[in-house]
Length: 256
Image (tube, rainbow, N blue to C red; front, side, top):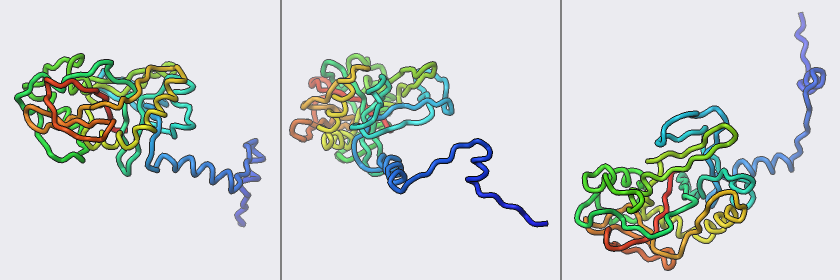
């Protein structure tokens, strides 16, 4: 008995399914859109909740299916609605999310200028901020620091929470941290572009946004018991400064 075959296009047509013709130009356009997030650069990102990922959790949970990012110049994230969670820097295999807001006033790094919270380092190219920030907050010296007063505690307790329809989208506490010097260097490198992306969201008027300032920002990297490293976004200079006696700008970051 012979086996009868049928072209897929004929079957689709007979069963009422739509048939579309993809031109070379349209395919190239779609492929470029899908591949663009793999290129180094600046994007706008959000926690996407399409019903497949985590749907519940406390303030420490990430709630949503995945973190989505799109080119800052053309995306509707944060523009058509207040759904942006971070400005994202793609750098090789590292994807850094930068909070949209920061404290209105400068902060001390921590409550003590005589103790090491995690471990000191002279390596200013580290990207282990989550480990360092958690280590500082687990120490007996800094574990009770007030997030409203101190930089490390502020970032450790930072979170984003919003809804899309009835679905919660959240990047919970302890999933943000005070940047490392490596993180701050990346932010400094893309400073103008990051502020253009922030300004675009700010102009849309859907959610709160603070532009980065040409000022000194704390890192989580300790240079001694008395001091931590900072980077000046105006000049790019790096210094070790007193944890208590100096108050600097603070911007939380996360892995995106």
